[in-house]
Length: 438
Image 1: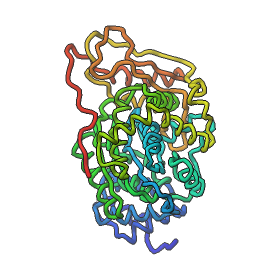
Image 2: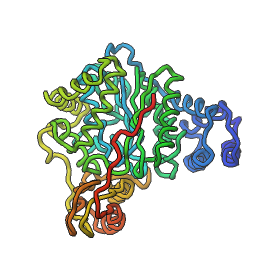
Image 3: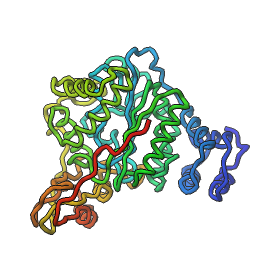
Image 4: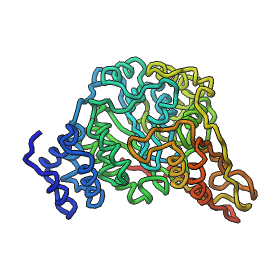
C-alpha cells in the first residue's frame, strides 16, 4: 500500500472541515482493510466524518472503495430476479427472518447479507446465531450455492467480501459514530451492491429507537441510498417506518427468533406481520413477479398459510448448519435463567413505549455489544407486555425481563422504568408506514 498520504494529515483536514479527494478516500479504505491504518486512527477519522459529513463528491468514491475492497458476488447465472431487503436498524426488528422465506417462496431469489447489532439496535446475524449450529459466515462459493439451491441465504460478510465495511461496521458500533447519513448509506449500499442484485428494498426507520430520529433525516438517508443505487444501475425503493416503539413484543436474540417463527405460522404480533407484508409486496413488485399490489399480498399470505415459507426457512437453517427441529421445538432456543417483571406505576393507557430505552437496556443485559469484541448472550432479552394504546392497571406487568446477571438487571431498571409513559386518556398512534422514496 502506497504511503504517499499521511493519515494524520487527512484526519486533521477533515476534522477542520476540509474535503478529501477520491484518491485519498480510496487510499484510506484500502490501507485500513490491509491493516496499515490502525483502529485508533480510523476511529478518529470516523468521528471527523460523523461531525463533518461526506458530500456527494466524497460519498461516491468512499462507497466505491468499500465496495471494491474485496470480492464481489456473481449471481448472473441465477434466472430468478435477485432482490434483497435491508433495515437501517431498529429495536425488536426481526422482520428479515420472516420476510425473506416468504418472498423466496414466491419465486424471488433473496441473497440476504445481514449485519450485527449496532449501538442500541439488534442485528439479524446475532439473532440467527441463537439457532443451534446456524452458521452466518459463509464463503462466497457456499453463499452462491445455497442461493442456487434454495433461492435464499441468510448470511453475513465473509472475510473476502467487502472486508472494509465489515471492519468499519464493528468500529462504528464501538465509537459512537453510527447515526451518520453518509456512513450508514455507504455501509448498506457497499454490501448490497456487492450482491449482484436486480433490486433492493430498504426499511428506513424513523423515531426514538432509530438512528434517524425524525422523518426529514430518514428521508435524506433514503434518498441518498436510492441515488447510490441508481448510480450503479440498481433500482432501490425505500419505506419510512415507525420506530418510536419496538417492533413486535420480543427484544433480544433467541426470543426474537421464536417470534419470527410465530409469524411464519400465521401468528405473532400484527405489526411484525404487517411490515413484513408491506416490504414483501415491494420486493415482489420490484422483482417483476406481479404488477398488482393485491396479488402480491395474496401470494405472500398464501406462502404463510400453506406452510411453504416456514418449510423454506427450515431448509435454509439446515443448509447453513443449523438444527431445523427448532421450527417445531422452541425449547431448543436458549432462555434466560432468571425473570423480572416491570410493573406499571399507575392505571391508564400506554402513551409511550420508548424503543431507545428498551434497546439500550437489552444491550446492557448482554443481548448486544458495548465493545466490538463483546460476546452476545442469546438467552437474555425483554418481552413487552403492553405497547402504545394498551389499557393498564396499577401494578400490571409492562414487560418481562430475562436476565443472567443480577447486577446488569439492577443497572437497566431505571431505563425500563422510564421507557413506559402512562396517560389518563387514549391517544392516537402514528402509522406503521410513514412514507416512501423511490
